Structure formats: C-alpha cells, structure tokens
Image (cartoon, rainbow, N blue to C red; front, side, top):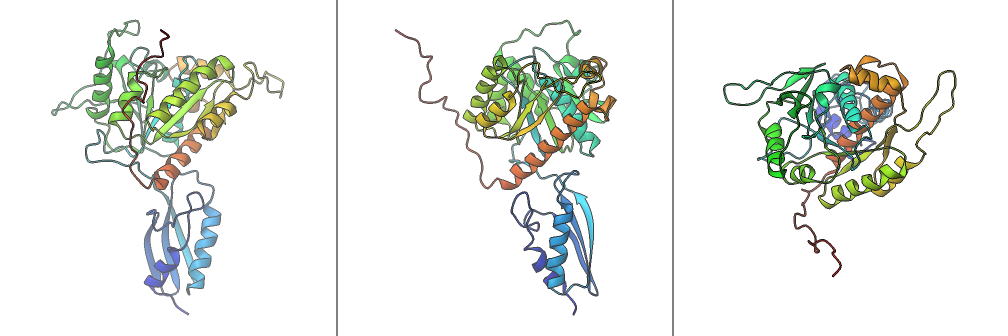
Amino acid sequence: MSILLEEAHEALSKVLDPEIGKPLVELGLIRDLSVDGGTVKVGVDRMTSTSSNNDAIASELRAALETAGATGVEIDWGVKTLTRDIPADDPCPGVKNIILVVSGKGGVGKSTVATNIALALKRAGSRVGILDADMYGPSIPTMLGVMGRPAADADGRITPLERFGVKLMSIGFLIESEKTAVIWRGPMLQGALLQFIKDVEWGPLDYLVLDLPPGTGDIVITLSQRVNTTGAVVVTTPQDVALADVYKSIAMLKKVNIPILGVVENQSYFVCDGCDTKHQLFGEGGGEKVAQFAEAPLLGQVPMDPAVGKWGDAGTPVVQAAPGSDVAAALTKVAEEIADRASVMNASRTKKVEIDRSGGKNRHLPIAR
C-alpha cells in the first residue's frame, strides 16, 4: 500500500500539539512534507528547543501516517518560536515576544532574574535583547559589565550595545556616570521608554526582555497602552513584607490586561556547605501564594547563592559564568518554562485583547470627609 501527498497531509492534520490541544498543521509547525514511494519525510517544529514531548508526538505522527498507508516515516526536528499578535503600528514588529519582568517590591532580585533568563534563552539558541526600563535605577550596565554610548545610524535609529550575543539598551549607557541621578518627571520617562522600544534597531528577535522598575507607575501603564506584550513574569521573595507589594503589581497587570506568564520565587532557600538541608531563611510558601493570587503557575524557586552577587557585580551573570551550578540550573529551568508559557499563550490567543484605559468607576482617592 502506498500513500499520496494529500493523504499524508490529511493524516498529519489530525495530530494535536499536546501542550495546546490544536493541530500541528494549524499552528504552522509542520513543514517540508514530501512522499518518496511509501516513505513520508516531514519537518516538525517545536515551540522551544527544550520541548519534552518529542517522543510522544513522533509516536502519534508515525501511527497516523502508517494508518494512511506510509511504510516509513522520517522526521526532521526544528524549533519555531510562536509570535505575539503584532499590529500594523507595532513599535518593534521584528520582535516575536516581549516579556516583562516585574515586581511591586524593590530588592527582590528582579534584574538578576531578568538578565539570567535572557542569557539562558540566548544559550538555548534564541535571539534575545534586554531593555532596562528602570530609568531611575538602571542595573543592566553593571550586571552585564557594559559601559559605552550607543551610536545612531544614518536614519537616526539607535544601535544597541551587545554582550554575550544579547542586544542591550539602558539609560545607564547615556548618563555621565553610574553615580549620576536621573531627575525626570513621568512624561519624560514615558518618552524615553518609547524611544528605546521603537527607535532602537533591535532587528529580528525571538525575545525582548524588559527589566521594569518596582511599583505600579507610569512605565507599566505606558507599556500596556502602546505595546502588545506577550506577558509578564512576576518576581517575589518568600516573606510577607514582599508579598504585600507584589500583590499590588499583579492587581495592576490584571487591570490593564497584561497576561501573567508565571511567578518566580527568588532567594527561596539556602543550602550551606557540607549540608543537603534547605534552609528557608525568609520563610516559605510565598511564591505559591502569589501564584494562586495571579492565577498563574509558579515557574520556579531560585536558591540563594553568593555566586549570584559575585558574578553579577563582575558583569557576568551566573548562568553564563557558572552554567553547571545549582542556581544557574534553576534559572535556566525558569527560562525554559517562560518560553513554553509564551508559546502556549501565543497559540491560544483567539481574539485581540481590549485594554481598559478608563481608570475604573472610582477615579478618585477614597478620602474620608
């Protein structure tokens, strides 16, 4: 029994992606289909390079094609990053995914998480950029060991700096020194942020990671109104004093309809030398509480490790400097989970998100009279 090309295509159209529940053909993950005698050759793209469902998908593909008459099946695996909705007026149309790293609380290691997940995605083969959106306290120049001034091309577009193959932009590259204060009001911050997004020559990227400032101010509101983001990653630490502010940031994300990809619990525990016991120095369960409130998964728990601060201060994040360490493995796993969640969310979107810009029914502070 032989198989025709049309019959092979029909058989493949019934095979679903296990993570999304939609046909691989509909998702655009089937390519280069050909038939040579009774053998079907087909290219299958996965949404991330770390997808763990390849064996199950291969089994279903072979079963479907053999039922349709194939005597042999050859699969060429590849990776295809699924894309956010990109409207005609998008400020950076070449960027497939825009990931916000947020926290209502300062000092929880948000910049550490942002830089390390960006480098982990790059090490997995993705094209990545980092935008330091914390105008008052830029950390990216120090954490990636980069100082310099971006140049402009003939069209006036800004060429980002690079480190470890990752494209970088920060207000820290434009001020006189790391001790210079940025004293700007809200409108200037918003203007600078939008210029960094639309006037920087990011080129084609799979992921642009934005390291946002703490709080629920102008930066996030501007992004919700002007940029179609893939989603936000919320960073917290376990203790209650951090959770109170993180809850506020989640409430804000929900209000402006920015999807929440998941929660990262940083500084979750400490393992001392010569001891396999996890010591929860700041309590436990905080990340789970935040994830439940966000109605999103807990993407990972990152342990405390002096190497993180050491390598960050040296300008080489721990994922790059010590990829075999436990903390680097935890951060790499978080990056993999983010990539999976981003692809699933992109594939699952069926309609354009409407953003509520009204400010709500009660626009005034509840002042007692």
